[in-house]
Image (cartoon, rainbow, N blue to C red; front, top):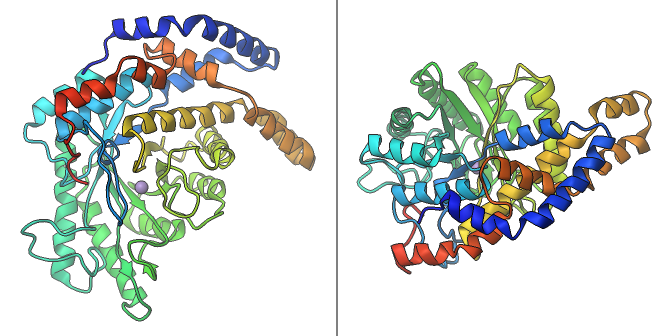
Length: 426
Ligand SMILES: [Mn+2]
């Protein structure tokens, strides 16, 4: 299944009249307020979010997994799925692979296939949270932090393999998320685990190509429920500092305890030039991996407000790598990803509408109510016509989810792949 320009212009037709009205009205409102609509549209059109290969199939919980028909059964089909998302949304211009789930057989063919869809290879992800078939050592009690040198060496070698695989595809970064930790008090020694982790990461860092970055992800709990070795942004930041200038902290929205002020973490990291990557999702209780913006859209807007400020004011921070990190248990994964992409773009567009000059003035004058009004005025603006216009300009769908249903994409995928195809790696 490939979505052609002809498909898109046909399906866009019925949404054009309403869109033209809505966009004209919003443009007028924004222009009267002094917003540069063309500049905002350009930023929205340029904003691309990587899709992780593991989000294209049905996820599951430890209680079970309910499959979704027509799932991509191999790397080629995963790239095709991201191609469909990108054709519709013009926002999913990259894929993030997980090794060993997504090792290419033919690198040239895979690169060509991705290029034909306009898709880049974003960060590659290593996997030391489960044992691989025929592995000599087990990660049951940790990987990079393990008390056994042989286990640590195996995990280091795996990460270096992942870098080499990514390098052949054109990736420029490695994301390390460790499941390492302890499930019971007294099970491990905190200091030794941290020391081992630092030394292991330093060894991986040494093997990075010059133009690569290392992203260190943190998480306060799960799968270990008493402690994790890299539990918070501070630990990640400290490890990144210990590795060197190509190492950065990666923030995953779901990897915080409830009510953590994530926008403040973002601001701190960008001030220090250490925010390397960002994983989007949403949560009610913990690492729920829900659709972006489905539970706490205002928090997402506040985070984007900090990100936009950082992108405009912190040249010391590289442009962050954006990725959705979610899992779909009951929805069509592609529909869910389109909803997430829309929510991300919406929060970004609203943050771009915050009048930074007036906010700065109000902050200096300690006009607290005015500060809140400025943020909420931007947040309350319905920016969806801007998103649609940016998509239309780039050749996408005015209404991606509706177009996906109008074009019967899932039905076509089920016909192609069968009802029982299961996404590899999950
Ligand atoms: Mn993540």
